[in-house]
Image 1 (cartoon, rainbow, N blue to C red):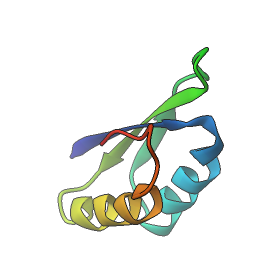
Image 2: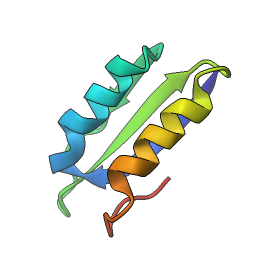
Image 3: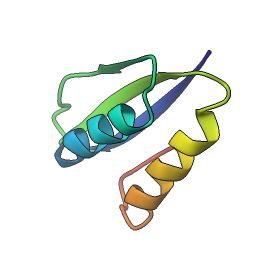
Image 4: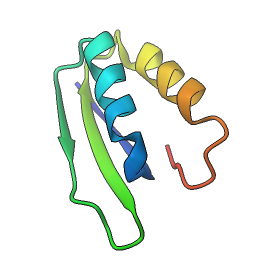
Amino acid sequence: MKTIEVIADAGHHDTIVRIAQQQQIEDIWFSQNNEDGRIVARLLVSPEKRQKVLDALQTIFHNAETTTF
């Protein structure tokens, strides 16, 4: 298993959850909203699903300025 950490604007919470559900990841954890409006999501992903999850996240957040992979 690998953990993918995503830092994004809090408004992307539902999108991250949707990607996790679509890709049937093992587990997901979210931090509380930071004072700067960002959240941290940690996704536990099996090796065979890792690239698909990364591709889905990349597509969604391609133009987001405050997103880190």
